[in-house]
Length: 104
Image 1 (cartoon, rainbow, N blue to C red):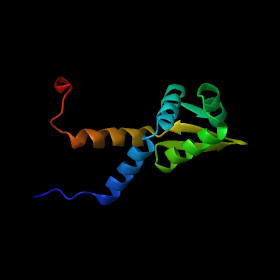
Image 2 (image 1 turned 180 degrees about the horizontal axis):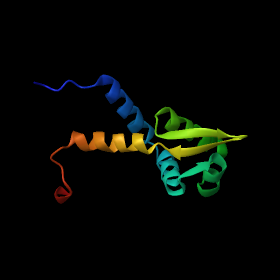
Image 3 (image 1 turned 60 degrees about the vertical axis):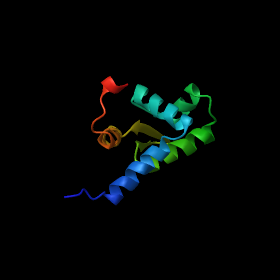
Image 4 (image 1 turned 45 degrees about the horizontal axis):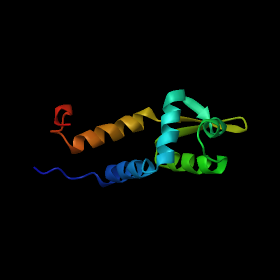
């Protein structure tokens, strides 16, 4: 029996990978993981990016399902969707089932 790819799942995984394909978004994700949750202004404080740039990158990460944004008064507080990040890690690992750390 051959395994049929799950196109919807593959599309979602590809969108997450594409969202991570920019160094600024990797930095933002790393910052969110470090702080657990924060507002856009805090990210602007620690990264050398303009507020509008950070906002645009947050939008891409949110659309890909990698982060969650919750409105708290006039601000939106962002955090990493750890379930989605774990599913991405699992899917990437599944691409190379025979890979192990000894092959590095």
